[in-house]
Image (cartoon, rainbow, N blue to C red; front, side, top):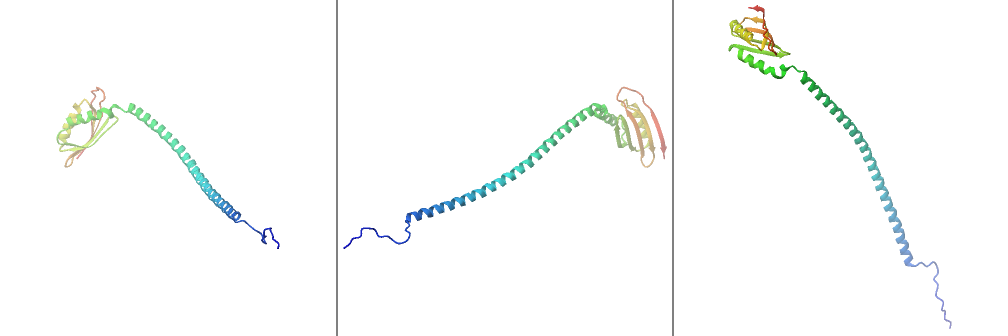
Length: 192
């Protein structure tokens, strides 16, 4: 009897199971790395687009900021110019507009008779113009006499006196800013 000590050989290609499992794991690992790499590339591309958009917005904002700063500087210089002009105008304004309005109004309040009304009062560059009406020409005459007695109002001119239901008048005069005692009365036409 013969004993065959040689191992039996199987016919065909023999593959170990552990190699197959390692190969499958390797393929899965490569595939998952490829998928991860693709996902990361997509994220990087999205982030780059977002960075590009943010940079464009930043450039636009920088342009607007420069424009804003330029306008702010222009506004500041214009405000300085306005302030300079206002200061120079304050220096050039006659004292009448600063103080004598009150004096003129107080003076008129003292000398105007009770039944004389003022419809229009205009003070411009030390010139006074009064329009109004009174109950009679005698009361208007009393008003003119009171104006003549005033040291603050000079060069009084009666430009219009019109009789009707009430007597309307138009008086022009100068405001005395100094101590001048010149007073004149110039009468205009009297209309009935």
